[in-house]
Image 1: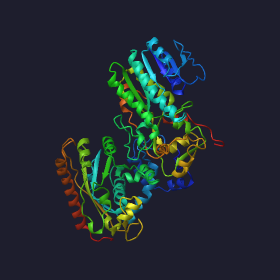
Image 2: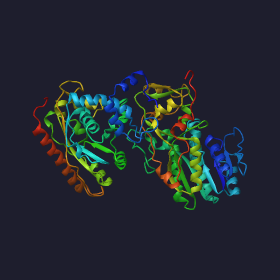
Image 3: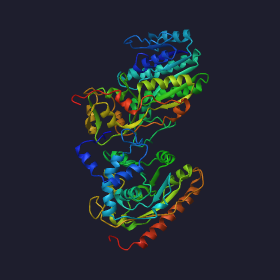
Image 4: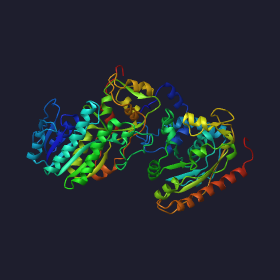
Length: 280
Length: 313
């Protein structure tokens, strides 16, 4: 079935996707219709093209190392970690790790800001790569369909971390915990190390952010959204399973969220202590 | 079953009338617009009777009182833009109110009301696959559709007001087919179809024959309540345009806003463009579970039902 972007340029790119990458995306994809999309708008051929770029970043640029990826359980689940880096390179690298290193490969769904759904091109790019607006209804439906969801519970605030806040954890939202309880999904904590150096934000220029309607407006060393080639690593912890209905009072939920937050903090401490150099 | 169909001159009404007649029901169709041609179904036990009647005229009440219908299918609810807004408003609000009241007053036991998926609206924070419990938010960006929402909610409220009247409201996704006049089907009649640069929302469609089947199934199954009716699946709107044999014309939003009302595009509020930007996807599982409904036409057959041959293709 020809793709919507069938044309010589895209065909040319498609021919350059290595068989290994193509095969891993095909193994991770499911529920694809006759036109090459799943019902959420995910397109394996778009994902393969993205993987061409993200594989380069993963293997050559950030030289990402994963620890304990086999701990991510099969079936439905939530990946909960620290936002480390402006520009969502952290989420991209976690998703790439799950495609390249997990066995079997998994297509991760990240819960993204509504802001991106409003942006031309960006919204289509994200949807074709399986990323959806972070609404509780979407998340619950995906979990019930046994998907793996990536959540940065620090939210947009965590994505806008500046240099002095590096590897500090901001307050976690509680929505992910309620959904995990409601759908009986295991939570795998992880730490992302290296992003704070790759995309260091010196300051967040709030008036400019307000002017353009962005969640934040970082001033980075490269001045453009290009990251520095810091070596990155991802540490996955043991999956956590909590008992409950998801309908508990906030105090009870916050106590459970704090257990997850402590696990993420411990993984960050381990990652930072095992790191030998920022760039090498 | 003796069934009355309102809006019977429209393509939905004609398809449903033929289907019900072929299934052995006795069908009376009314419409305020003239009937293009008579409806004859070879297999029908009873010939279909078509009457040109305005729902607000006395003659319509006489018909309902006299004929003792077993069911009414109210299809004279318009979500398209063929008629002036004020006329559509009158048909949707006053027409629906009157049909409901007459069914209750004259002991019609069963009423099926046509509604539309568009009432949920196309908003950036829409959840994917909205259930019947999602609020109909179309008015937030596109207030011109509020009369369709009101007609739907009036039918819902009548379930409490008239407990002896068994009501089902069917909110269906855009239907495609050789005769469909749904907004998307009308758009695909043109060779060049405008889209918005940088947007390509997932869109659901159902074949027009499957929609008639859904109404028939709803009628005979006796289900009560509000139901989403969905078809064989969802694809990006660009795929629908391509498979229909149309040529996509991606325009920036400001240009397309200015083009509304010209070049054969409907003269409606710019809120209509939201449907080219964000998904408005429904969860049809409540209806499928309650009735066992499955579409006969798969995704490919549904999309190709509006296909035209491109020169040189």
